Length: 165
Image (tube, rainbow, N blue to C red; front, side):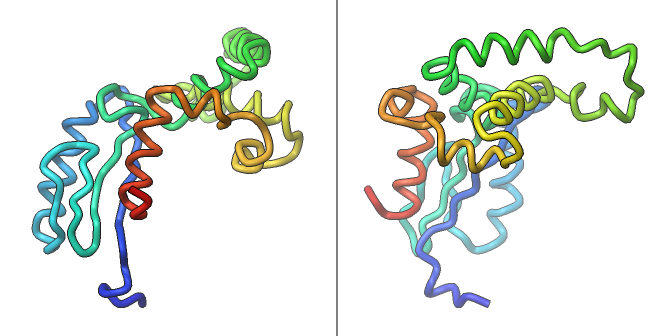
């Protein structure tokens, strides 16, 4: 176990699906964490500069319901717009009458189609590899996409948690 004195920062990065707003998710989480002894932020996205630093970031931007895939789709729109169009058409064109409810369970979730589009793009860029490898090796995040507001917000949060700013 790592001694508490050795922990510099704790950052919780979560999704907020369509059934819950980021603010509601933040409020529920901070009410549960307030009994932990951590200095809990009072504002979503804020990093408390205590020991350890602590903050909560809810994808994609602390305001809108969504997931990491929403940010990735914004990045893909910048660098791979044709792959985005083709993958979106592919996922939208699936004949679901050939699939049963178990087959459709993940696809029918609020972010299921976005996850399928992102996975389709990743499988073209890095066949047989994980999404993480594609993000690392391809142009999901580069100088251009670092200028997207949601990417800037996530980066600022991570920089504050790790002490880079």
